[in-house]
Image 1: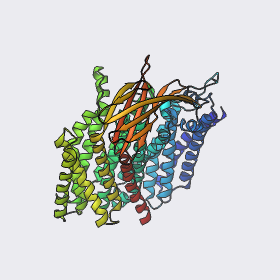
Image 2: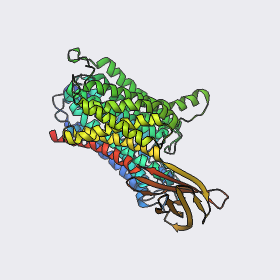
Image 3: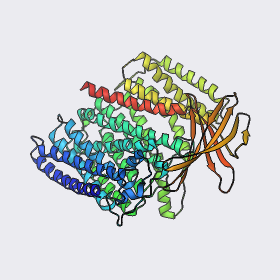
Image 4: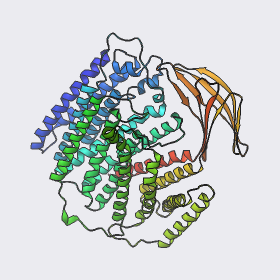
Length: 626
């Protein structure tokens, strides 16, 4: 109980310091010769108090202090130590405290790392960030306090949802939040720069590293969530267009577009409006994601809050921030017409702006697919779900020109280009089409669309691969990221094209066999762990070439809460995954068996890591140049 008391008072003190920082910032803004040292001191103290509060919650979980309501609802004495710690942010209250921790950390780092920036700009950025921080303090204390008491004190907790007790999902939220909350600094700084009318090439170079760091963490966070969904949920796929998956994808699309706009702004004083609006949109989409997940509006395996009061608070807070940012944009943003120049139709700027429009289209599709069912339910009480067919039909046709422009764009020059090396560009396109025809011919009924898709992805793949040999370290970060993206699209296409699945019901000792696969249900065994017992199915799987694999999927029955989960067994090679999962059929003596061969799964994960690495190379290069 002591840690809960300390943690709770730390939140109140942190809120008080936030108000003090607003007062000091206003005072310093009127006399901006030097940054008041008290501002840095109070910012550090605020961060320190949130750290204390967060550590108190961690200790409450580790010590199984069930006088704390959050611990009682999300922990249990038999839960492994690692998941006791991870349980700190595996719930609504703890995850928002983690949000607050990252918010205060980022503004502290910003103040320390921007000593060469104008004083007024630093002060205004702090003020806007403190508005967000104060909002989260109030939200935590009023509607989602992680230090509420329970009396009489229970002797045991309710436990954490077993599907959240997983290493990937344990580290997924902190990394994802570094991406989400990183966008808050971009938001605050762009409002400050717009207010002071200093959105310039120099400012673009400064803000680029913040956008890059946020983008890297967001990309890796989405990757971890996707890997978790693949092996934990037992569906055998890496992306299901689940609403909560979409919620993390939308700010990623906006942030990727923003990065490309910043690249243009670094070279020429254009696209300033794009940069401002995208900076606001990225943070607004991150906040919207928090609203949709925390309010319980979305129906998803990922959601874990259902409280209208919380949803209403975030919604009002979000609209207030959007209104403030739009007010600043329309009243303070001035476009310098002297620095504007018309786009030549064949230039790098044109290629980036065209691909930006494609990215905005993809973002719109995902946004509509995610929120349309919510509005339909509110207006007509009709419940629908928007699945993969909707996204595929609207996105795939536009993916082809997007990939082609992505391949050709980097070859163009700034301002005006003549498109050199036409022969090799045309040759590689012909080779790509020929190869895709050979690949698709015998494997797909949708010959035309798959041929065009694979051709465009192969084209980007070959061009970026050639650039590694021709250009060497020139534009290395861009080449790595674009090469990784081409590899991602190819891996996804081949995965969907060559995957096959068997779903059958088997008793122990029975055999399933078709022309390609033989599955023998050899035996079952049992084992008991600290917080669950498991039934293990032992299978022998033989493919058409006679290769034999031993696979052992599990059914786990957790003691608290009393829930059964399916744990897939996956054999991974460079070329494919063999994925098997079992489920009990109620009141029957056989098991439902789902066996899948998933080609190029490993390359999907590696390609996303490669994309993130491209961002990291750009970030390190930026730091090195300083």
